[in-house]
Length: 146
Image (cartoon, rainbow, N blue to C red; front, side):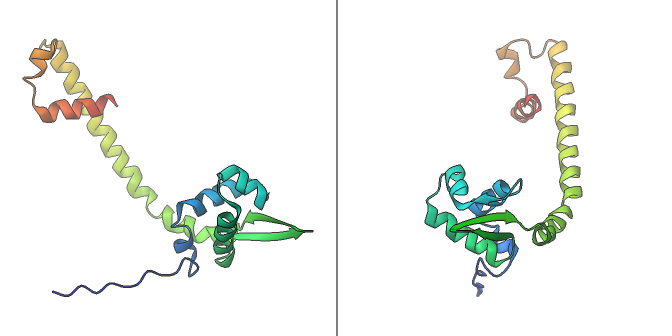
């Protein structure tokens, strides 16, 4: 059986590839509130200036940020119009995740009730009696507490 590998798209090919890099997402988050200078971004993110400039260039190339020159200084801000497709795409999955989280919550609440029922009946008052409870129940109960 032969598996063909496709080369990865360049980071400047589209917004999705650009935000695949965690530092660029962090940069976008920082720029979301207001326009910032490169120096501000360097100080906030704790990265070297050449690295920040490289990430900003990628974000600018895919139009996720806009740049304004003021004298020798460059100021960056997010481009909401370019970010909208990212938001719309991820929004499609919101219903799925909300459903999954509801199911996890229901299961945890059910296991918590089961644990309390066992505790009231005296079957889990001591660590000795708790050992008689199935390992799966113990694990599920621990998750319910979290």
